[in-house]
Length: 180
Image: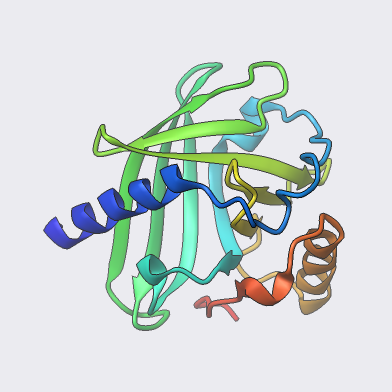
C-alpha cells in the first residue's frame, strides 16, 4: 500500500504541472453536455482507452466505481488488475466533489486527503452508456463505457470522437479487460 501511496503522490504532482503543449490546449474546451449527476455518478464505468502513464504500466481491466453521496459529493473507487485480467487487484479510493453544479461535468477527487485529480467530461451519450473525459489541461484523455466488453465498432467510434476533439488518439492505449 505504501507504493500505491507514493504513486498517488507522484500523480498529484504531475497533474498540478499541466502541459502547455497538450493536444487540446491550443483551442478552447469543447462544449460539454450537462450530466444528470444521479445517473452518471452512480455505479461502475469500465476503462476502455487511457493515456500511457507509468502509474498504470502493467495494469489492465481498469474500472471506476462512483457512489453518489449527495448532489455534489461522490465516493470514487478506481481499480485495475496488475499483470493481467486475473491479476491482483489494485485499488484507490477518493472523495469526489462536483465543481460545476448544474452542468456536473467537472469532478475533483482527493485521494489520501492530499492528492488532487480533476476530470472533465467532454462527451457522453444520452443513455449514459459511455463517456470521454480529460484532465483540466486537456493533456490526457480517457474513454469509459458501462459495458465491460463493448463491441469493437463502439470503441472505434469513441476513438474517432476523441480525435474530433483534436486529441492525438495514437497517445491512447486500450488495455486488456477480462471480458475482451
